Image 1 (cartoon, rainbow, N blue to C red):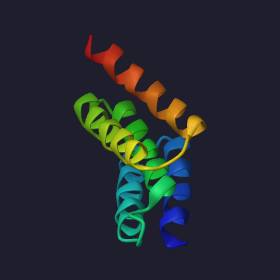
Image 2: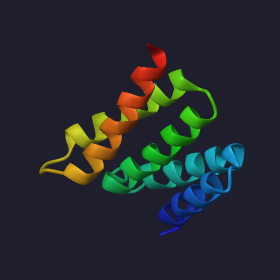
Image 3: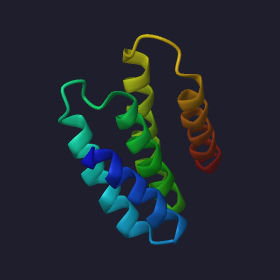
Image 4: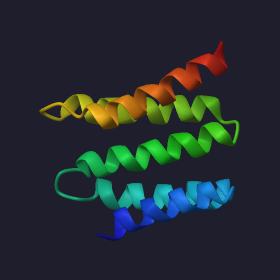
Length: 101
């Protein structure tokens, strides 16, 4: 799936320290995933997670917070437990809130 491939590329760009490129690729991947019949489901949460990480690392704490809130909303709308994804998202929430004081 092209959306998931872009999300994987975003993680690579992030790991290389190319935050602007990572954000662009993550947004493109997220757009493709959200156009899917199930609005991307867990893949969309993964896309939001890397985008939040990139925004946070780039100093856009407010943008990261909004992105994390979107991820939590997607998870909340899905049936069933998604503990690994939820834990990662909540970790990002805690980092954002700590940064905000």
